[in-house]
Image 1 (cartoon, rainbow, N blue to C red):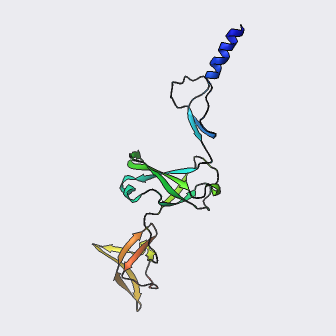
Image 2 (cartoon, one colour):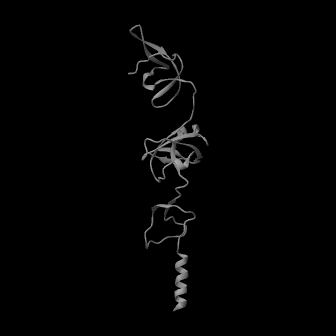
Image 3 (cartoon, helix red, strand yellow):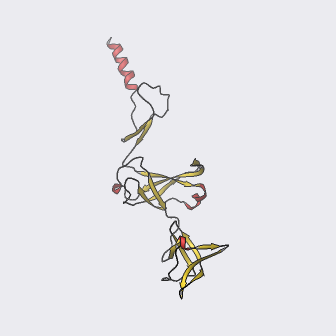
Length: 190
C-alpha cells in the first residue's frame, strides 16, 4: 500500500503546472477536470513589473512607425495622467482588426514605476510621427479646400477675404501653415 501511495504521489507531482515567472493570472481557459493536451494553453499570466501597451496600427500608416519612436499613453482608468513611452516592437504580419488590416505595435513606458499597475486596460495612444519646431498652427476646421487650392478666411477691413495657404503636418484639431499666413493673423473658424 505504501508503494501505491508513492506512485500516486509521484504522478500527482508530475501534474503540477508552474509558471516560468512570478505574475498574476489574468485569464483561465480551462477548468478543474478539463482534459488538457500537451502544449495546449490553459490561460494567461502577466508580469506586472513589465507593463507594456499593445496598440494596433492600420496597414496604411505602418510605414510611418519605427522602433524607439516616442509615444504618449493615456490609460482609460487614469484619464488625467499622460505617460510617455517608446515603440519597442512592430509586428511583421498584418491581422484583421475591425474590418481592416493592421499591425500590432508594442510600447514600453519610459518610467515604468510611475505607471499604475493595471492589466488588460484600454488606452489612448498617440504616436509622434513628425515634429515641427516653431510652427504656425491654425484650427484644422478653419482650412477650406477648393479643387487643389487650400485657403483660410480672414477679416480684412470688415470684409472676409480668402488667403491661399500651404499646409504641413496636421492632427485632428490643428494644422501647420507653411506659407500664406503670419503669426497673429486672425482666421475665421466656421
